[in-house]
Image (cartoon, rainbow, N blue to C red; front, side):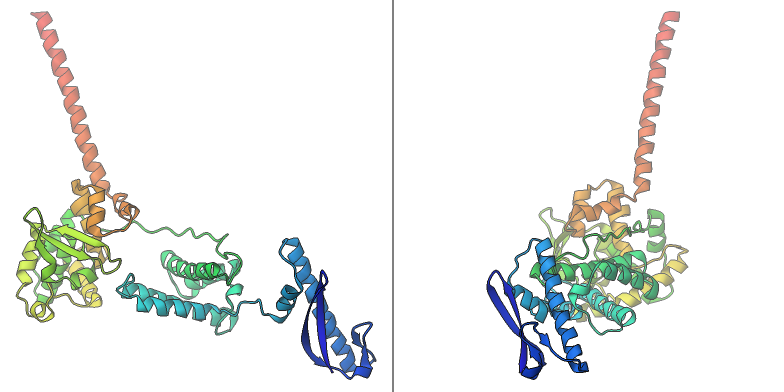
Length: 401
């Protein structure tokens, strides 16, 4: 006959089969156990004692937490019905699948790629640390997070900021699970990441002129140089320059040419008045065969090739900074605009930032602007002192006469 466990709380019962059977003659209804000295009877009784202890421990936990206690809740805990069956990688993959559907509708392809890299890192971590293919989301705790960070830094060789980015991805997944009610507490509650972003690198005016005025023996280097300079004077990112069409360059209310686009990454509108340096480059390539074929404003190569050629340009121009295409955007924000007195709110709008805090990172690194302003202040103070001396000399001369 099958053996059942009955749980009673405040006179209300809940039953379920423990998955074991026994011959009725070997069963004691009073003790609720098997009788006899046979090995299988002792093993059965140990199993039943374990079930009873598990129920009592969970009952104590509920009472201590002042949670609701019912026979059904205790039974479901014992049978595992109230345990989440959501696994980390399954939830992660579902998130990435949804993100892929939203590419161009709030997410960029590059952002999707970073989340794809992120899920690969989690898979490798689970295999290395736990020797499993997946894990229940309830097992993601403080230790899991800190161990994952160590894995990213040591085993994957990520720098502090890259590791921080992947930890932020994991946090997003777990906060979703928390909101869905699949986990009880936030595993990131006591976790702190102290990684800080490095100061953004940019070209000063002397370095920018060195690149701008250099003629290279190879056409590919001249083309890459021109497109890089274009971004230095517009602040457009690589993908936005690559997708820039001639019809997005029109006259504004002031009668001058402007770029009117939405940033591919954030879909934030960008309205950028064209400086003369940028106009010259657009005119230079308006009839280029690649521009006519693709119906774009500039013959932009792949990001990898652009960055490879920029390293050649840096060597030829004796520039020691690591020259990447994104450096042009930093140069626009600092050397071209903020250093020349353009208000940070205006710069933020031209860059297409959603928050002024993002733009403020550029303002923190402009030592040249601070130096120039302090030098101007020093000149004013010297002029003031000189005027006071001259006035004093005139008074002495009048007294002497």
